[in-house]
Each structure stands twice: as C-alpha cells, then as structure tokens.
Image 1 (tube, rainbow, N blue to C red):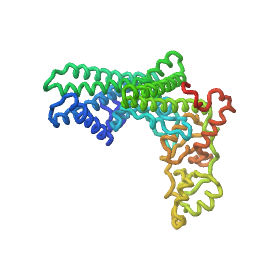
Image 2 (image 1 turned 60 degrees about the vertical axis):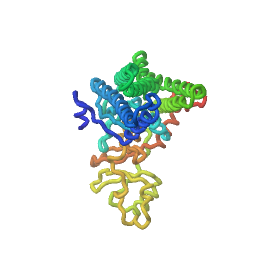
Image 3 (image 1 turned 180 degrees about the vertical axis):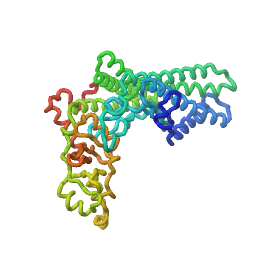
Image 4 (image 1 turned 135 degrees about the vertical axis):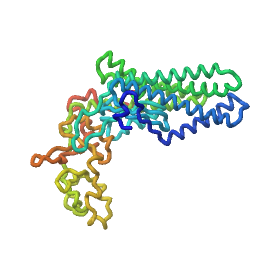
Amino acid sequence: MTTHDATRRGHLPPITVRPGLAVSVAIVTVLLSAITLPATVPGRPGFAYLSGGLIGAGLLVGVLLAADLMRARSARRSGVTVLGITLGAFGSRLVLAGAPDRSAGVAVAPHPTTPHPAAHQPALHGIDLAPPPVAALDPTPGTGTQVGTQVEARIARAGLLVTAAAGALLVVLGALAPAGTWELAGEVALWVGTFALLVTLVDVLPSPRSSGGRLIAARVERRTGSRARAEQAAARAGVITGWSLIAVGLVGSFLVGFVALWAVLLGWLALGTSRFAQAQQRTYVALEGLTVRDVMSPPPPPLSAWTTVASALDEVVLPSRRAVFGVEDFDGSLAGVALLRDLAAVPMDDRGLARINRVMIPLEMVATARPDEQLTDVTGRLLERPAAGCVAVIGAAPDDGRLRLIGTVGPVELKQAVETAPLRGRATTVRPAHPGGFWR
C-alpha cells in the first residue's frame, strides 16, 4: 500500500511488524503465565496459564494498536499524511509525514555532538514525525506538511482517550468477573487494563515528545500565540517531571521496593529528552537568521569520476588539505561526493586501478541544500542523510547551468556559527547549560 493510498479516507494505514514485537510478546506472556496468573488464580493447568498469557499479550498489543489507529484517523482529519504504524519491541508507533521543523520530533538544529532525540525516548507507543526526503538534485525548502502544536495535541488526545477508555473497561470487567471458569479471564483483563492505564499515565506526563508535553505546548501557544514559547514550556515541564520522577523513584525504592526504580528510569528518560530539547531550542535561536551561504566552507576542487584514486590523491586531495570533494560525471554534472577517509582506505596496490566512482557516495545519499536556504531548515538533513557527514551546497554553473558543488556545511561550520552567536547580538539567548540550572 502506498502512502497516497494509506491517507485516503476509509483505508487503514500500512502496518509494519518488527522482529522485536515477538520479544515483547514473549516477555508479557512469560510474566502472565509463569508469575502473575499462577499466583492470583492457583490450581489451573499449565496450558490454561499459557493461553491466558498469550491472550493477554495479544490484547495489550491490540489496545496500543487501536490507540494508534485512532491517532491516524485524527491525523487524517487534520490533513496530515499518515505514513504507517510500526509494531516493534517498544509497542506501537504512529509515523506521520511532517516538514523538518524544530518541534516535530526530529532534530533540525542539534549540536554536532548530540545524538538524535529518539535515542532518549523509547516508549510503548507514540508519534514519530518523519521529514520528507530532500531532493538530491533540486533541493527545495518548505516541502512537506507543517504539523502545528494544535494538531499534535488533537492527535495525542485521541490516543490517550483510547488507552484510558480501554484500560478502564478492562479493569471493570476484570473486577466483576465471577469466580470459577471466568476467573482466569478476569485476571488477564484486570492485568492488561491496569497496564493500559499505566501507559496512559506515563504518556500524559509532560515531556517534549509525550502526549502530555504536546497538550501543554498547545495550551501555551493558544494563550501566547508563540510556538517558541510553547516548546520552551514543554521542555521546562519535562525537566520538572524528570527530576520529580527520579526523586519519587529513589524514595519509593526504600519504602516500596526496587520496583519503584522504574520511576527513576522514566524520569531519566524524560530529563534527557527535555535537556536535549532545550539545547536544540537554544541552537535554533543561535542559527536563526543565517543562510547556508553565510556559514558554508568554500568549494573543494572537484574530482572526475573516471580518475584513478592514486591520481586524485596526488594531484588534488592531498595538496588541497580538504576532506570532502565533489565528483563530476563524464558530462560534467555532479554525481556525488568522495571522502578523504574512503580514498585513503583503498589499498595501495589498488589505487592505480580503482576509479573515483568506485568509492564515491552517490548524490541521492548526500544531504543537499541551496546557498539561499535558511540554515535552520537545512541542518536537520544531516540526520536524514549522514553518509557524507556534511550538507553539500549545490548551485548551477553560470556557463552551462549544470549543478556544481559550491560549498559544504558540516559540524565544524555549525559549531562555529553557534559559538559566534554573541557577535550577532544573541548572547542573551544562547548560553551553555549550567550544571546547577536544574529547572531551566
């Protein structure tokens, strides 16, 4: 099913099942069949416990999938393209198409040494906003659909209602289940319902990528009219939530037991995500107003695709003292880029025979931009296409109109732009994180 078909009314979005889902189902099945059910409903055969565990795991996956299906329905009604739903080790996740803006759950202006925020946010379910692919030969800014905070809140609210309603219903059915034959089924419903309510509670806790954080951001934007303030409020709330959960978990580990350490883990994840969001916001402010032309390095000497690696190293690469080089095809058009490390990795015996096109990175795998694009709209492409380690700035040659590599923007250029922000009058908004500033 294509993305276009998946977004039409009445069609289910594509559902992708990852191998990790089997691991999660197995863990839930073991917890129910080997620990929970024998302790709460003793005296039943092992097959009954195993069946109850499998049913409980399937029911839990069904609740999470239903929540994402409701989110997908809400997204379509709001005009957002639904790319699909992924079932994996951490449950179900809805993937939406969104432009790479700084609040869409994808990093657009990260510090060069900071990992992607998704690495800090494993969850049982949630929303991922995938940026559209950047055209390799015709980079055009502004493509895709900007997902606003109000739309994000509407989508998040739909998922919360499903998990809360399903959890409450299952808890009631489990509590009212009669003794005897239905007692085992009631215990399964009670366990799954309680888990669904716990998922709802965790998701409603404020953090930049949680449903609670999206609801806070939408409310702040309605009151202030500023999306930047809304994102800052969600990040600050996430920091407070993180530290609060850590404190509750540490105290609970002494009063309740080691099970309370789960709160510490959730708090650490919320704190890390919120800290990253704050750093991302400061970086965005530091780069705001700059174009790619303002920070790009001058173009390195081009290489010919048919030139041998030995000739390229001796004649161009080593004398230029550069690390990234544009590679021109036979007709003079830009075919890709070659990295110094890849050229140096070619064995000495092969350098006289190996051609540049053997080790170059094709242009469709390289992040590209035009020199007049805003820097804040470009930097996120490094995360989408990191093969070259930089953004290739492309422009048309004045003589024949063919595309040429006219510069590069990489981590060094971005770091320099951030560090020189005070010279551009942004000293009050760009500041490093202070170890004592827990609540900022």
